[in-house]
Image (cartoon, rainbow, N blue to C red; front, side):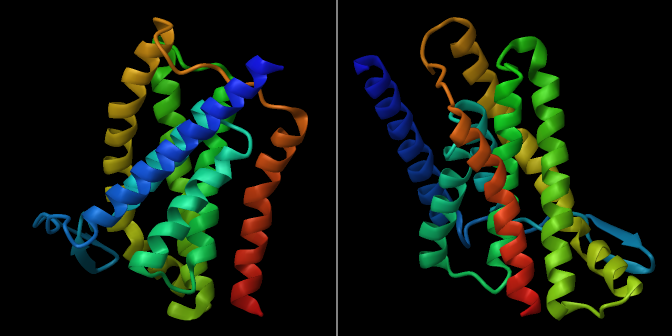
Length: 228
């Protein structure tokens, strides 16, 4: 019983640590990112920068890590807490439920990796692969929200244009988040394999169900917020 209390306390403290790091870094880097490099791409006669820099990678990497190391409730508590805290300071717009649910999806992907016990050196490519897939899902989902919200015409052409315009952000998301995850996950795996720190936390059945239901509920609410 005492051991369980200590484990839960450690889990909560680690969650607070991730939330604090994510919130502080996101606020500090706001308006302090360098300008986009002068590299351009042309797709469908639309020329635009190849990369559009934003703060996505901070919350994305921590969302995946929270699911991978903490799991359960923290797959959504950590990313949503970071977004709520920083949105109060930096502001947000009507698409916030799409972005919030997108980060919770990333947390769930991290948790699915946790269930597969992938915190080993040989599984680093798998972790990065799942992370890459999660980023693509995030961008597909949030840009669908942009299209649904009326920023583009509700036609096939409007949807295609929406995703073309989003490519610079997607390329940046992939590059920056893969780099961030690599810098975090490799030391974490080293610590786990050498039993230095980062304990395993058991997840009960209720937590598992809620962690899976959370992104679904948020996605439904996001769509309702647009069409109502």
